[in-house]
Amino acid sequence: MTDDNASTDAVVIERNFDAPVALIWQMWTDPEHFKAWYGPDGATIPVAKMDVRVGGTRLVCMEVQTPNGAMQMWFTGEYRDVVENERLVYTESMSDERGNVRSASDMGMPEGHPTTTEIRVELEDVEGRTKMVMTHVGIPADSPGAAGWTMAFHKLAAYVAAR
Image 1: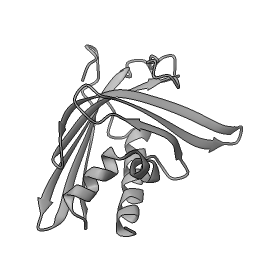
Image 2: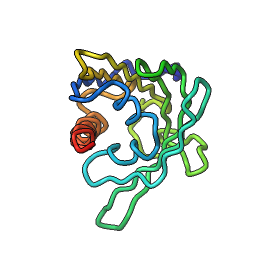
Image 3: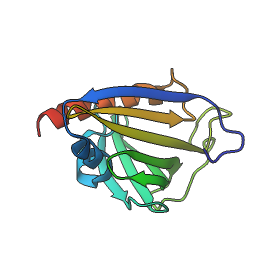
Image 4: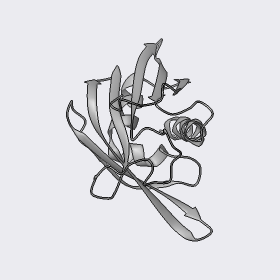
């Protein structure tokens, strides 16, 4: 993680997919595939820009419908480790649509919420299936963000099964 005062909380989710590692890798690294599954139920991803290489950047927009209309949340980050079909590590910060980082307090997050978190995705081939371990460092295991990941991985499983 990049914040000096960041929380030591982390969400760790392990999932097994009846799909080859190369396909799950594409789900994380190809913008069109990523847009199809990322986010909680009801969320859409109108923008996903990914320069998947160490030092490359990402910019993602998640849109959800609220009683007051559509609400957009933007996230930016940098790829820190990229080992094709094995490991993907990137930072994530809330941002504006140009990728300018916004502080957690600017976004209405509680005191102590880190501005930048880190996502680690580890993939392993297990007899033609994929074991995926995703660790989101800086997010409490009982947070709405953790619940969002769980919903997203249900969507990912359904999307992969339909391929």
